[in-house]
Length: 259
Image (cartoon, rainbow, N blue to C red):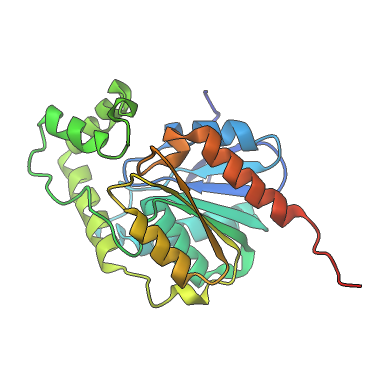
């Protein structure tokens, strides 16, 4: 699907549909294509918003999880969104967590899928093989349970990023920042209802990470999806959307008052 990319000040984003905002944050190699099925499904009931995270546009000092979270905060303020359902995959989940811990007031719920913030097997660990297409292809395939999900377009997209020396430096900076920025001690402060949707075959943030998030975030519920890796919304979109829909519908119900 082609979506109009809107611009306000320095912010570039997609906004489709009406209703409470469902804000989607992509990961380190992510982009719009990751969320195509989610946008299509939820634009009927929500205002689906995908901000383009400035992974490669911040100066190196601010190329951190915290720097991206600041960008998200300024974006949300500029657009004046409230009652936000904040969804993040991989590094996007980490950014969502850092944002929520600093600025909980506009967020109604949190959804994490394959999120970093506690532990991850980094993509940024061994990038000296910059021009090696097969190496990048194998790395991209590791994101998924089914390696065929790593389409030629997707592999080419990642390969192009890794051919740019400045972008590689920034990816490594972000990956290192994610590893340093462990949120284990802070997660019990989260008060929002939280949904964790995890691939049972995620090798980057394995299932034990999901269980730990579930243990540490008070009002959280955890759902595993079989035959699914690090990007459930791409690999098993129907199941992912069904779980998310049920969660959001539950939040839309007015609380019943005991008589």
